[in-house]
Image (cartoon, rainbow, N blue to C red; front, top):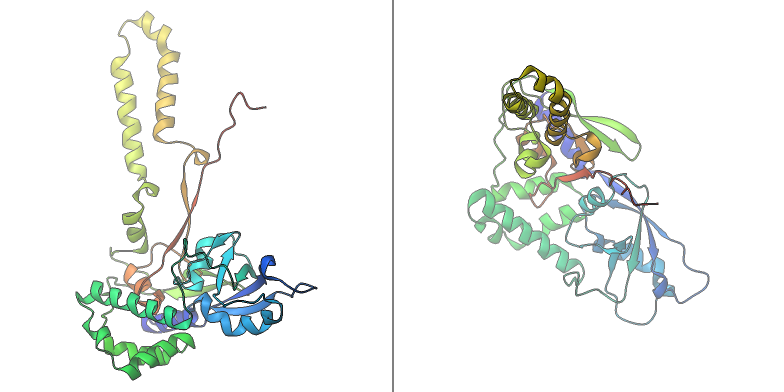
Length: 333
């Protein structure tokens, strides 16, 4: 399979992606007995949670208290930002992927002090358009192509996102002239680069591998989070420097050398441990997840951007780190 075909396959996989949700109505808004059953929904990864209102309102309407509907969601007590795509929220909040994803929905008591106001589909639509303008400005230095879209193109673009129609989206978005990131790899593609966990198990999605040096996903993540990419060569150099310093400080007298040998070795071990702490003592990069996929970091970044970005032309990279376990205090009982 050539690189172009792999890209189209990955894009199709992304646009068809969905997350099974089990949505419970918050107990403070339940006015009937028995409590309503949770709603089971397959939510598009590219979609936004407030757009589920037409599915959820009929399911819970008979038990809601009087008032005006203002839908919002929470996960384990955390209000969810409605302008972030559903798939990105899931990747961020569920390192150990939970299926179905259990969410709580509210129709009352909107937390305006935490979330920006959302007045239904129009708010979501204009948030999407504004993100697209921002992306266009970053790519082209201006957003005039987005601002000059005809009304019909704007409607078609939004409905292509709303309905998960990749072909319609590509047809309209091509008019925006948002250039793709230039390919920076040379070599034969490898079909085993993207390791993905899907609803039905683990599958492999293809991606290209370069033979010459290019800017990779690893390089991109490293530029953002350099503290998780300590080079082994640097550690080795630091260890060698410490050992040389300790040797130069050791006394020249043979009797003193014998007497202090154990002290010097112990100090060297302590210094080495400071430079190269054990795995349990450092914060480590656990995984990088994009569109529910855990890609290998050797993939050219250009390929990742061009094929795994969201419709608003942003690439959402979710990084999960492993935090070291706190050592118990000697005074703990």
